[in-house]
Image (cartoon, rainbow, N blue to C red):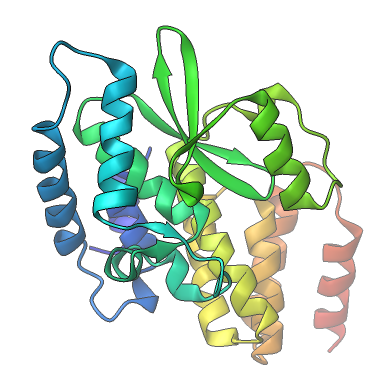
Length: 264
């Protein structure tokens, strides 16, 4: 199944881990999500036997975090943070290392298999996970062992991740739609490929961003840049025309690029 086929079958991307595999499939030796899903099923079965009786939410969360970060040894990769494999779910599972968003996807998907109303939370510069409860949204940081995140810790995370350039607001601690989570995962890879001038890889990440955000002009504009770097003015012009159509306001930069391409 391709990413396009997955999005047609699950447009809201509720099957988050499966979507994460499809979203990065061109970078994987084996793009079949089945092994990842089987592994998550096995962990969920193991974890179900550890759920507290009588029921206690906080003890259940502790059991989830203990399994992932103690028994299985998952942790944030601080040493090779920018390595692409940190965004590739099969490799994250194999290495037990990953980016905040990849570890959060595992946390959320596993929690959902146990019946929790789990969500991703996209802070500026950092990604965490959360649970919707009767008491509100409880947030946790899988990159740091599932540490609880309230407004104070959230402010510290945003300040550290943005170098103090972004002011924290409690509204930042709100759920991110699943489809946007996958788009953010792919964008992590896309930016790494752009910086490394890996244009073939940047082409597929650009295409996947368009599939995930079809009404957003930004991915079209970015893929046009990749086409230009690959010496493909025709496809670049097509992307710019579509970006201009999708833009809510005139974009002088897009118009200038299109004029240069037509003159060339």
